[in-house]
Image (cartoon, rainbow, N blue to C red):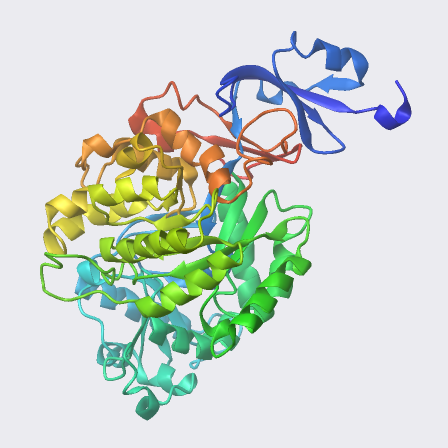
Length: 566
């Protein structure tokens, strides 16, 4: 055969290949073009004989006794947010298993305070290389009021009145500081006293107030050594979960220009076995005070930054209501048990104006919605935009989908929207929110995925890492079993089948990102991205889905085994 048409092929036989292609749902071999990193054919060794007769090839039996799936996709996580959090001390109510450590759970107010005090003492101790820096900030992540009780500036002052202490909420959307931290990061108490999302007496910054605090923290959080360590850990966690594609759903959440060079240096390297689809915020600090034309001009040039593994497209992110873990989602009657109310991330009229600007300029809009009122705002806006300027295949996507009503599912389907859900909320929070927040009926129906799929709504699963472990199989396990932390099955009618859950972390996740022609299933012409499992998810007991060991991944035709087995 002529040299220009010569292809070097590698063929991977497997115990089973689950393709996520309904025309050919299973196979036993896949052939890969080594030079292009693309799939040539999936089928059997016999059916692909014409290719093998025509081109040099080798048979690689590495996966002969394993299960090959399309590379897992998480369409909504936050590499920079994870990179900021992962160097922190994890003090959480749940155990966190990470590739480099396991953080034991801490529960109870006294236990939380004791652990925080222990961390301060550990930082104060002489490490053998000279006296520790008493001014080094102690920043911890994972606090939650339901498990850890009250948090206040004075509580942190009693831990230390000299070391800056920052307690970051489990939601990421709020934090507390002691006096030393307020001073260290130059937060003006008088100026902030009237801010609607700052309780300066308590040292609490939430939603838009938290963004003000983060702006002051950025030089410390994004310092090259610290941020670089976080990105390295992020890479480990993403690979550990079997991903080959992730979506950064709010790139530039801290400061895009400060982050960008480090993101390229860490995530566009030959040893990074995944690509990142980048979705910028269409509101927030970067565009504060800028005209519509200036916002559009800035968004238009972001794809000029694209590299092989880091890619902007025509997607943007907006917010409606507050964080789910913070109990700041906006919920309809009867509201919260204790009578408190949620928060809007931006005023509803501003949300509609910015959504209209993005819609009319052809962007695919992703909207953070956690409560049913936040979802209502998003759907009412979509309804109005469709009336004003109808669009087909718009991929307007509801992100998170914490609380909803059955009737809203029908509207989602009728308006042609998609959903990318964080179903892990159900596992960690259903019991707690049942007893302390919104009652059993609504808590048990978080993430009503079964209704979505029955209505034909394209439905993906995401982790919003670190809001959930960076493990698509774990998300699928929650969706299939709907087990709360106590082991109670919550709203069993909303369970997905294993096949539906696998679609939600492969081809349906690709659809949400607009990448379904490139990734998400195993068929000729797509990128040779595979996740390799040691057991068949369609054969194991559904309760054991999250226990299936991952051998590793294949990214663009190149195998990347895990350095550590789960």
